[in-house]
Every structure is written in structure tokens, then in C-alpha cells.
Image (cartoon, rainbow, N blue to C red):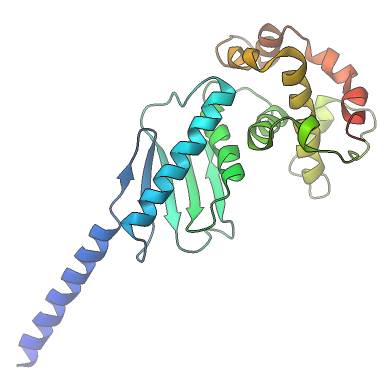
Length: 231
């Protein structure tokens, strides 16, 4: 009798596991593969995320003028609680986005998708341009969305800006400077030229000058004026 009960228990566990696995089967869309990480996630919840990520992707590709060019699909891993303390984050090199149920901010989602889309065609870009462009896609032009004074930046150079990323005291400010510069470039030279930077050849500076018809050294010299407009 005990042995019978034991086998019944095993069968029930297997059936329960199978039911749980079936409930969290991956959902595939045109550009994404959405995977539930752990039990308790409903198929309907994955379908909602399906619509969110595709909607955000369409907005990103519209701004950039390009789409995701890698083989395969972008993977979205869905968690019930924040993974590694963050409700939404991405690994651009792995084309993976980590999201938390009920905590998907559309702006942040567009920011992270931008990193994934540009990772291959703009692999030589400095971080200031990657983050500035992601901020632009997330919020729009800084001139229309930001009206505070930027922190002072003495003796500005792109090298010094690049060094600010990853530093505890200057990390947040670096995003503002990068956003300001990218906003200036796109507003001044035209958003329609942005797509050209992804198909040009050479170093990043070569791609930049060919796409926008401007030299990075000129932008560097204009930094004081660019940052001053937000005061």
C-alpha cells in the first residue's frame, strides 16, 4: 500500500511539473522569443509582453532607420521578481532582455532594445554615442525634454566624457552630456541621416563624418554652446 502511494505521488509530481512547463512555454513573435523563467507565469502574461516588446521595437527601428540584423531573435527572459535587483536590463552582446512582470517601463525598454539593435552595425562606437543615442530614442530630443542646467564640464573632450562612464561620481552626469550631444547632432544635421551611420565603413569617426557631414572635432569645440542651451 505504501509503495502504491509512493508511485501515485511520483505520478502526481510529474503531471504537476508537466502542467507547469506547458503553462510557461516560450512565445515567439516576429522579432522576439519570450521565455518564462520559473513557475507562476501565465501564457496571457507572456502575450502581453509580446505586444509591449514588439511595440517598443517598432518605435526604436522607426527612429534609427534600421532593424535588428543578427540571425535569430532577441530573447526576452521574464521573471516574477527583479533579476539581479533590476526590473529591466539587457545584455546587448547576447541580444537578451531581462524583464519583470508588471514592471516594464516603455522608455527603458526602448533604451535597451536600442543597444541590442545597434550592437552589430555600430560595434566600434564609443560608449558616449551608444548611451546618448539610447537616451534619445528613450526620451526624444533633449532640447524638448530637459530644461535644467547641466553640470559644468571643464575642458570637455570625448576622451574625458568616455572616462566618466563607469565612475561612481560622474556616471549619471555622463548620460546627460551624451544625450545632449546626440540630440544636438540629430537636431542640427537631420534624423534622416542617422541611418547612414550604420552602413558606412571605417572607424567610428569616419562613419560619423560621412553620415552627418560633420567632424567630431567640431562637435567637441561646440560643447560649451551645446551644454549651455539647457540652462
